[in-house]
Image 1 (tube, rainbow, N blue to C red):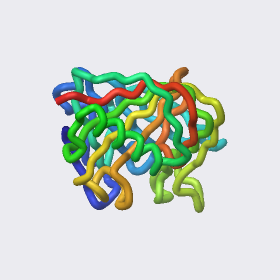
Image 2 (image 1 turned 45 degrees about the vertical axis):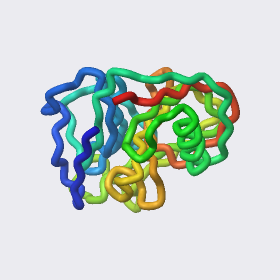
Image 3 (image 1 turned 90 degrees about the horizontal axis):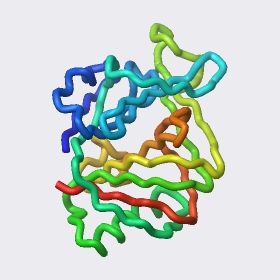
Image 4 (image 1 turned 45 degrees about the horizontal axis):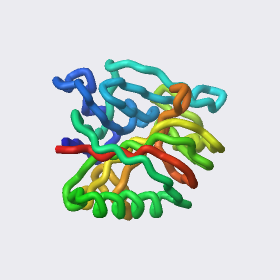
Length: 204
């Protein structure tokens, strides 16, 4: 697993310079905080907010990010289970419990995929902080989107060692969502669900 970070929001990482894109998974902000990037199995998606506040999803390698975490994952261990959680903290706990139950080492960073239909979901797409950057809207640093009963896939980077680097300071996970129809993608802020999912853990 690899991570890169910078303290400012200038785009330092050109995604098309990542040499090995096979089975690549990754996430980070797009451009100069102009949106979100998620890479699912070598397919790059980036979302931005249009003038009407709608989230627009595109796919292209010719994009940049101020900080980005990624990993090439060729092997997964899949589990089908009923999963109930009311927030991201409970989702993190469910990941940890299953990992420990199945013998995965939680002290090392790893990647998780979760496929399913989710009861409630709130995502955001970051927006530019400066009037000089295309897409800027006054007094808006992000656009929030609420969904109910939405099907898709969650990509999670888990680490107990990178708080404040590629996870929030109070969490071990950083999670993005991509809808099944590929029309919705963003950073997950809130989530509630109770049902069947397929959870996959990366294998070194």
